Image 1: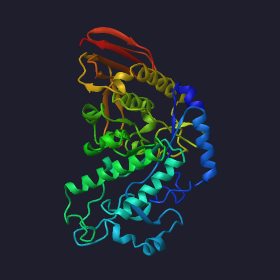
Image 2 (image 1 turned 135 degrees about the horizontal axis):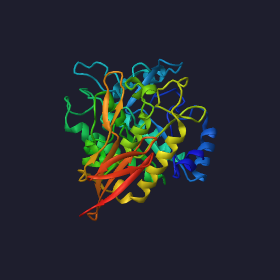
Image 3 (image 1 turned 180 degrees about the vertical axis):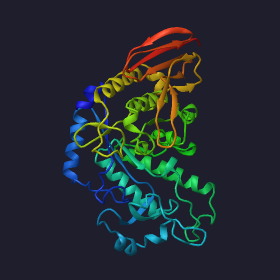
Image 4 (image 1 turned 60 degrees about the vertical axis):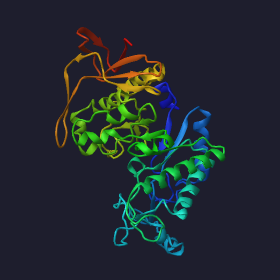
Length: 390
């Protein structure tokens, strides 16, 4: 696999639009849009090359009708009385889901056994088909689900702790059944796992690139939870809506360096022609970023992640101890301009108490800066690691 070779690491192909109903039209995903046999050949090819396969779900939703193709499940919806197990508002009204531009759908109430059975069936199909990672709870930010006020489901009539307990019970039961099937498939969610679900969702789509639209984000989640769950950077689908991409040619490199400093596994989005693009919603007619620097930076960051896995996979983020003085990186935005240091840094502690601090130059040219008061030259697309006193 070309990317695996270029990045000098295993890769996971996370297929975004694979479900046969059309993009994000849950809950029935199988068979894949290209057919089961084509999917199996692809999975087999990935596994034989030492790589992994992942797929997206669309959370606790039930699609009645697609707004982008001819998929229509309204007959099945009525036949199986799905309305009885969907979330309801205070007056019994339908609780519409997000992504309404794609589908006419309602949320499933996880307190209902029938709703859990529907989602479980689809997850176990993926487990049997040798999927390594199923982002089943995409669009369930943090693995939450729509508030339900139904008087017919047997749960309290107002939102509360029972919803968290229902989801925790479902996750534990589903993970147990996946393991009983002989699969090691990992489940994940969009937006990273909320506190109650961290132990059941060990790998998630943090997608903190989206936070750039609001201003200058910090690695708050990683400070608290990184030692317990790992995340990846996501498909960066919203970036083209708030970054002037062509005026900020280094912005993808910046985002990758930012993700690395947050302990995240790196992700890139591929076009049909195999090029790496700016993000999932970027028009394929737009000129792609320069490819060679992306390969170089990801390779170097992955090498550091493997070498220092005790920190970046199993460790905890701590406050940096060494000060950095460098130039400012300016990222032109459609709403506001963002200003970051040209050298990004983060610090970590492993389970033995050892500490380390990383310094990343994501730019395509060398940069001169002061690290701990000393003049330092960092090569292009490079990472420097300095051990800290215990």
